[in-house]
Each structure stands twice: as C-alpha cells, then as structure tokens.
Length: 426
Image (cartoon, rainbow, N blue to C red; front, top):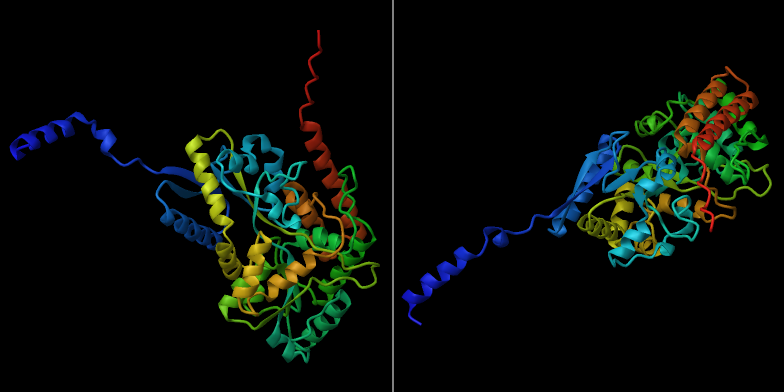
C-alpha cells in the first residue's frame, strides 16, 4: 500500500483508541504505619526505598501512626503495643491468609518457634510477622574493665559475679558501674523466664512477686543505694549512657550490638544475661521480643498483592543477613541465620550467637509478658522505681504491682462482650 494511504489510516486508528488505554497504570500504593524513633524510622525508610526501587507495581509509603486511627495496609507494631493489637485482631487480616490468597510461597513453620510466640493462632499459623526481634544480653565496656583490674575477656556470668565487678568498677572511679534499659522486659519478663518461674498462672493471673523476683529486686535496691546500679529511665535511655562511655555494664536488647559496633567509640564485650546461680535449674531461656508486622483488614485486592510481595521481600535470606549486620536483629529463619553466620565477621555475630544460645535453653515459652501490656508495664516500672529508690520494700513493691496489674487485666477481661448464644435448631 502506498505510504500516503497508510499514514491517514494509522492516524485514524490512533485517534480512535481512548487516551486512557495508552497511559501506564499507576502503581498501587500501600501505607506502612509505625511509631519508631527518628533513627529507626530512617532505617525503615531506606528499607522501603529499596523495595520500591525493585519493582513498579507497588510502592510502599511510610507514615507515622496516630493512636486511634484505622489500621493501614501494613502496621509495624512495637513490643509495648502488641497486646493492644492482639486484642483488636478482628481489624486485621491474618498474615498466613494474605499469603495464601495471593499465592505467594510462605511457610510460617520455618520461623523459629521462639520468634512466633504470641503471633500464631491455635493451629500455629502466623497472624502477624515477627520482625526486628532481639533478646536482652549483657554488654561490658572493656576499657572500664581494664581500668578496674577486671579481665575484659571474661564478662560476669552470674549476678554474684556482677556484684564483684560493680564493686571494682566503683572503686576505680566509675559513677555508673551497671545500668539497664527496658526494666520490665529485662528484670521481670526475662528474669522470670531465665530462672524458670512464671509471671502469671495458668489462668493469666499475674504472680511475678515470688521469691526469685523479690530477691532480685531487693538486690538491685541494695546496689542502687551503694551506687553500683544507676537507673536512667524506662526505655533505652541507658543505651545512650553506655554508648557515651559513662557505664561499665549494661543489660539491654541484643540488637544494640550493631549500633555500638558501628559507632566505634567503645570497645565492647557481650555475654549472656546474668543469672542467679543459687536458683535450681537456672539458667533456662530468655524471651524474644521486638516488632511485629500486621496487615490491616478490608483492603483492596491490589493492596493485598503488594503486601504479600513486601513480606516475601523481608524474608529473603540476603536481606535478613543485612538487617542482622546493620541492626543486630535476629534472622527469622534458620536459612537466614546460617547465612548470617557464614557471611558476617566473627565480631559481628558475637551478640547474635549469645542471643540465640539464650533462646535455645530448656523451658516453656510464655505468651503473657508484662512488658507487652502497656498499662501493666507502666505499673510494673513505677513499682520497680519505688523499690530501687528505697521508697518501698521490694516485696511490697512487687505485691502492689501484681495487685494493680491484675485489676487492669480483670477490667480488660470484663470489658469484652459476651459471646452470642448459638441459634437453636427448630
């Protein structure tokens, strides 16, 4: 056909096609809400940017969560918020169901059982993804140890050894021989699990005012009076003091090891959380805690497809290794842990190995943790502070914390609507 005849025909065909069909479909936007501090939020942004750059169908947007807002497509939940999200789980779509509906390979059973506690249903299916998890360990300032005449390659293993080390650090001029972050998580939840005692009975009634917990609280009260132990706050305030070189020893999240290593300001040592060697059977195991990722309910199919892609991205072994190296978080799968052990330097995985050794010990895993019930956690930390400051005897402080905490738990249970009776057959 002659060119002069082809061109008008082609032009007519182009004009007949709607303009909308020629445009590229906009990517599906999914929102990921969080309540992280500035530093951790920046890390999350970089992770999301990496996912967004890999494909164009879905773009994740990071937004700060406002309490009371409806759930977003994805919701990154802190340890302190988790109980509130579990109580409102009807507002969320179970993660295993999202992955199944979108035909994205996902086997929650491959995640370590200690990481799935509290996030799986009765059949073991994950309702949310455990991400950014850690467990408390002991950090020491090697320079401070040398100054005090202590061996920096032999950190204390027991609380009795901790007292000897704190005494020598104090005599060497330290104004902060020992400090701690996350008091309720470290000194109630993990202290109890580490020594094989419960924080609640089989019916969920709090009982963390037993001999082990009272003895430990009284010991720290004595240390505080002697200036062996200094408390700086209820969150991670002590981390900053330790990182600045003010303190000789710190109990905190194992995830801190990455930040301390990268800062290069301190030569640190890591060891397991100390235990009381006069408690029969101790040590048992510590608890994994951190963040969990929840999927909002009532979203569009395209949004759930994007959610499934993002979850699959997070589970990639290479990414897990990078997150472990950068943030010290525990890899979620055994494959990722093996990869981390082979690809990272010995110094990089020291904290990781200590953390995993603690989590593998004998002992039952506990779903109820006072640090994950916000109102109860606040009560516990108030009473711990009263004991450590000498205002209240240790036994009385824990008795009061248990009593006040049980009132909160009872009120929450009583507020739940009664189940509707089944319809009778006619």
